[in-house]
Image 1: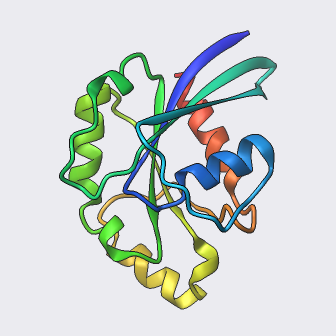
Image 2: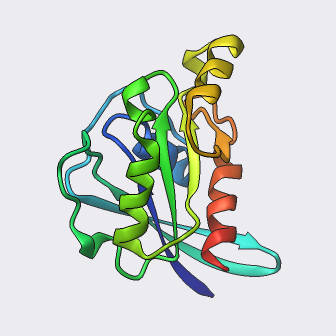
Amino acid sequence: MIAKKVLLVGNFGVGKTSLIRRFVLNEFSEDYISTIGVRVSKKVVEYKNETIKLMIWDVAGTSGNEKIPKAYFLGSSAAMFVFDVSREETYLTIAENLNIVKELSGLQNITVVGNKKDLLSAEELENVIQKVSVNIDLITSAKEDENVEDAFMKLTTLALK
């Protein structure tokens, strides 16, 4: 079995913990509990006849100007940057936030995921997609379990490269 450390990063309140809970436990809670520091979850997945143990690091969200300890990023194989499609402040500075994550982690390819799709209409979502300055890999809803598995499989694919 191969073990891979993967990161979920992004502003506070974008749904990183909810995505992980949905993926690992198939649970969703409306309660918001802020992650302090980092929380590690594990899930074993099958990918191309390989068994991979994902060590998913849920890195505490920031409001932009706090420093995230570089130690959280050491040894990571892949990262997912999560933003909230319903909160403009989580995606307007996405390019510079991605650069910070790339600098800290040494990773070049980072999966970009817009979460909380269930809060917007199709038209509103299209407007958000037009505003985001980077390519979005997937739009998810942890609440409705939409594209969550796909997002983590994309992360797994990156981790194995």
